[in-house]
Structures are given as C-alpha cells and as structure tokens.
Image (cartoon, rainbow, N blue to C red; front, side, top):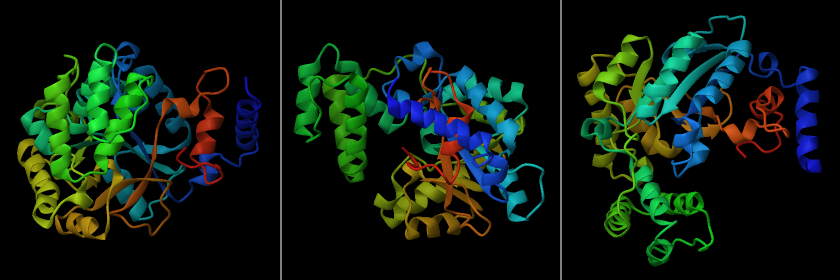
Length: 343
C-alpha cells in the first residue's frame, strides 16, 4: 500500500465523517447528474477494449445504493423540471443517465434499476440504432485491440502510418484508447477513412454479445418510465460538423426517436461532451429543453440548461486501498473539495 493511497483514503473518511463531503451538504439546491456507459459482467468486461467505461451489474447496484442514500433520484426530464421550478425536496436531486443505448444497458442495467425502483435517462444515437450498427469508437477499439495480441506488427504498422504513437509493448486496451483519442481529433471524413482502413486491414473483432438496443427495447424502457433521449444520429463530434450535418444530427435524431417510440424527446447529450456556442444554438433551435456535456461537476440554480455538467462514474475511481468500493471516496469525488476533479 502506498503512502499516497493511505492518505487519500484516510482523507476521504475524515471528510465524510465530519460531514464536509456529505452530498446533503455539498449538493443542496443543485442538480447533480451521474452518468454511466457500459454495464457488463466481468467476463465481458475482460473482452471489451475500453474497460474504463464499464461497471459490472454488482458495481452499478453499489452506486445506486449510494445515490438512494443521499439523493432524490430520477430521470433528467423529471429531476431537471423539479429543480428548475425550485420544488423543495428532503435530499438533493440527482438525474441518472446512461450514454450510447448499448444493449448491455437493457440486459444488465435495466434489472438493477428495476430492483432499486429507479428510472434513468438513456441517450440513444438514433441513426445508429436504426441501422443496428455499433458506434465508430467501439469499432475502432475492437479492430486494434483484437489484432494486437496475435498480429501486433500489422496493428502497430497501421497505427504508425496513421501517426498514432503507441509503444509496441502496450496492452491492447492502451492501443485501442490511443487510437480512439487520436480519431477524435481528426475531421469526420478522415475518421471514416481510418475506420475503413482499420477494419479492412485488421478485421472486425466485435463479439457476438455486443451491439446497440433495438427500437423495441428502447420502447420497453420508455413504457417502464425511463426517459429515452437523443445522443445525435451517429455519435458525431458536433463542433466538427458543418451546418447541414449539425442540423441533421440534432434535429433528425429527435424526429426519428419520436417517430419510432411515440414519446416526446426533450433531452440531448453531446457526443464526447463536445459542444460550442453554435452547437448549443442548434440544440435549442431543435426544441430540446435539456443538454448535458461531460464537464465535471454539479449544477447550481441558474446553470445553463443546455450545457449541464455531469459526474461520470468510474469503478476504479471509487476503490479504496483494500480494493473495495469506498463511499467516502465517491462522496469526496462528487464534492467541490476534491483536489483533482475528473481525474
């Protein structure tokens, strides 16, 4: 055990014990938004090339128990409306969100939510759902990570020619992560060319269990009281889009979701959290009431409704020195006292 780990955990315990990081104190009057991505059994997490985005069903259950203890939990539409209207509650409000409409959310998150008696907001990339096509970042990650153990020289050559710097002794997940980060920085047409090249030269390594939810599954979530909302059409990085593409990603995704599901769609999630003033204007023009980014933090009264901050939940960030999940660690991370927000 390192001295740093011991001090970190002890500080979290002292702060929560003194009430300084208690969410009832730290989040009072604010809208807190927690977000998850993948919810996979441990065996599937081991196959997924970006494990930092994953919690297991048991880990999700732990997070929900923490939220229930300290917050009034609901969808973004419901929690946001009550917060915006200043409706008083005994505990601070927390909106629970899941990004990307992954099939595992339906198979593994939905039962945990039902057992906890909680509803959440699921952000769906409507065009990708329509086509039944997994998202571009997952396709890139699977292509490289799948080839890395047995065809490392080929994978390393492709990455080198794309000017993605990855040591040859890197782990498959590190190679995948480096490629995805680099792909986010290039123009959309270049990103498509990279995807074609990676899959063409290294193959597609997507396991049979992976994929997005179907319209029927999203509809079942809506019928159960969950909110289904827009995550654009194709998970495009919106500030990179020209005006016509931006309009389609924002407006057409809402129209498609409403047509397929028969529900009103009022919430929007910026893919990768990327938004600028032009993007926010497009979201407003499309008729959304709420928009969420990946900026870390809670939202004070008067916060910009179309650019709300969130807390992304990572399993590794709440592990104590003994490997168990730590309530003081999570309370500290979600407070305004944490010295390394987002780390």
